Structure formats: C-alpha cells, structure tokens
Amino acid sequence: MAGIETASCIDLHAHVRLAATDGAAGPHGPENGIDDQGRPWYRVGNYKIVGVKHHGSPFTDPALRLEKMAKTGIDFQVLSPSPLTYFHWIEAPQALSFCRRYNDGVAELARTYPDKLGGLAALPMQDPEAAREELHRAVEELGLWGAAVGTEYPLPLHSPKFDPLYEAFTTLDVPLFLHPAPAGIDGPPGDASLKRFDLDVVVGFAAQETIAVATLIFGGVLERHPKLDVWISHGGGGVAFMAGRLAWAGMKRPWATEAMKKDGAFEAALHRLWYDTHLNDDRAVALLTEVVGPDHLVYGTNFAGWDQPDDGGHGPVSPALAGNARRLLRQAGTRTQA
View 1 (cartoon, one colour):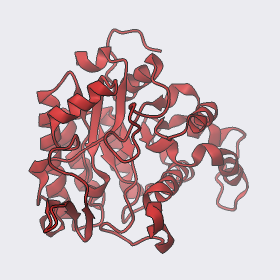
View 2 (cartoon, one colour; view 1 turned 135 degrees about the horizontal axis):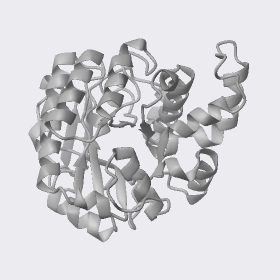
View 3 (cartoon, one colour; view 1 turned 90 degrees about the vertical axis):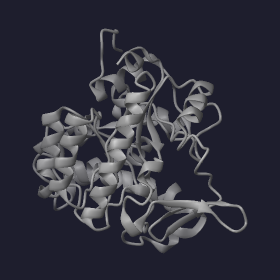
View 4 (cartoon, one colour; view 1 turned 45 degrees about the vertical axis):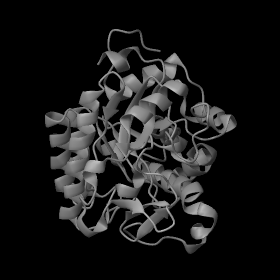
C-alpha cells in the first residue's frame, strides 16, 4: 500500500481496457481491429468507434499508462472499467462473464504495479444478486477496493432489490463509483437530440449524474444505508448548479418525504456523497467546493480520454484531495490526513 499512502496526486477517474476481456460478453464483444483504410476500430454490441486507437495506447498498455502518469504528475491511479463495457442491459450471464474476466484482469494489474495502480470491480447490475456475489469475490478474493458501475440499468438506483448489494458495500467497507455510459450502447436509445455533436457524452453524462444524485437522495438509499459511500464522476454533473432547486423540490413536491422536508436535509444528504473534480472549468470546481464542501472531493482526470487536458486534469491538485481519496478508499496509513 506504500504507493497510495505517500501519493500527492491520486487519480480516481481512470478507465482501463483489457485485452483479456475481448469477446468476454459473447456476441456483444468487446472487439477491436483495423478497417480496410487502416483505421483502428472498437466495437461493443452495435456501438462502434472508428479512428480511436486501442492497442498501443495508455488505455491498454500499462507501460504507456505509467509513462503518461509520470508526465502529468499523477502518482497513483485507481482503475475502473470503460463506460462502453458496463453491459448493464445485456443477458445477465454474459454480463457476469465479462465482469469476472475484467475483475481478474484489473486485479492482476494492481498486483503487478501495487505502487502505482489500484482497481475497482465491474458488476452485472441487471442481476442484483449476481452483482452482490461478484462484489464479494472481487473484494475478498481479488483484493479490489470497491466497484465502478453505470448510472442506468433495468432497475432504478433506489430499487429495494439493490438493498442487499448496497448492504454488501457497507459490510465489506468499500465504496461505489457511479459513472454514466452513452445511451443506446446496449440499452434504451435515449433522446435522439443527444446524438448530435456528441451531446450524449457532453451533456447526457451530466444529466445522468444529476439524476443519479437526486435518485439516491430522494429514493431513500442514503437513509437506508447510512454507512454507504458513493462517489460520482464529473462533479455530480449539474448538481452543484441545481442544488437549490433540488432542495426546494425535496421540500415542496407531492412525493417529498418528511425527512426531506426538514431544513437542510437535502444539503446534508448532498454532502454524504463524494465527487471527482473533473469538470473542465475551475469556476465549476469552485462552485462544487462551495456547495458540497472540500472534504468530499477527489481528483479525477478521465485519464487519456478526449477531455483530459495536456497538463493532467482540471481542478486543484492538493494533499487534501489525496487525503480525501485515501479516506474514501479506506487506504489511509500513518500519513497525516487533511
């Protein structure tokens, strides 16, 4: 654990693609190759990306990842599955097949580079019981530090059927990372207007994140599981900007619970969650810090993704953020925490 215990910059938003998972979801892939024009492609189900390098990139090559981490000042990363491979809408056995192979592979990476890399598990969220069992295996047998899943599945985040899974997170004392996936990869197609200008990623992700935060709070998940730690990508989407309106809805709308009607209840629940700082705008990070407080923020970059700046990532890099990451991941050692 020495790597994360002494790291000054810990990146908690870093996806990885593993060659070992090729074909693990059966006909859904993942699969990659080169087309007749020499362009690389990557396929998941009916979703295909052309022109994005797969092999020989920091996403797949650990040596290139470590080299880029060094250039951008990142001391330690916690790896999570690519959002393209959540597979939350396909047949449960095929989703579980992918998750098990991914979890075995990311655990091997973490064992190989323990001073630089940690890992989060993939889970088949369309089958809450299988997800609970795989979480236990991933943490207890493989040594992973939690799990990373999407924000949308056949069941809503606040479904009581997820309660045994959320209870498993608290029993195992590990956190849950929520990150959106583009609509329509293996599930409902989503709003057609978001297919223009890549808005499904640019705007759709923020909408999914905001909805996830509201669902966890209004749906009573945090009340039912007071020890559950969840962190949301991209600063929780638009939640900092909409905090006042969401709080007002929690008090005034017909479905409002008595717990939410109490003054400051929504704000307190908002502070229960954790948020990464990958917002591409220091003003947005400042607002997020003001709304949720500095003690539940962690550093994130979407490492090697389209929106990672050349100098590393947006938002401050500080010992406080590294300390927050260690607390969230239960990896705090003897070093003084912020």
